[in-house]
Image (cartoon, rainbow, N blue to C red; front, top):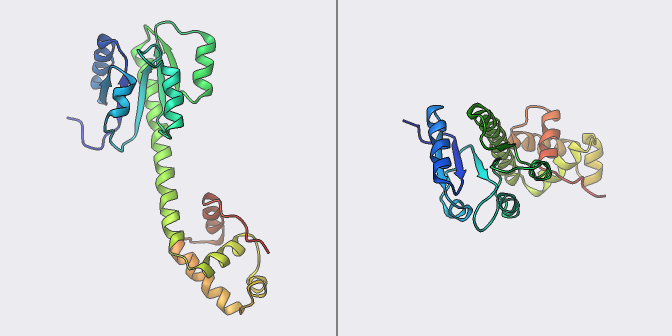
Length: 209
């Protein structure tokens, strides 16, 4: 039995036999999957917030796979895609890969090749989700800073010394140290270097004079 929260592979192919074949392969490898006969059905589904990827047939009724890839990107839906097709060509493959596809497999493909591509796609999605989670935590910490603590943090990470920041803000060096300490604690930064990395991830613009 697949545990809740397990990675999920979504299969979108209008060929019921192909959907069943891929689902069976994934089940034998201990992977959870959900199948859809059309791209629109996938969009309407309630997808769990777990590492996932999409095995997508290029030739679909209504909207083809490449168009659907673009539609997902436009909608801000970030999910690694593995294309499968019965009649792929090089320009189509190049276009798909340039748009971020993990793999482009031509039917009949080797089951292990598909499993390898799926593992790569799931690993990619896990990394993306971890990065997003980390950024959300940084933003949460930054939101707790007072306006003056944000000013001090911005000047600190720009490389200014405490006495320079004090002169810039018209306050004492002791006060700057206090604000700097508060910012470090609230951001959970163990060092100046870590605070600089956090500011870079938050894309904080240097304070203008």
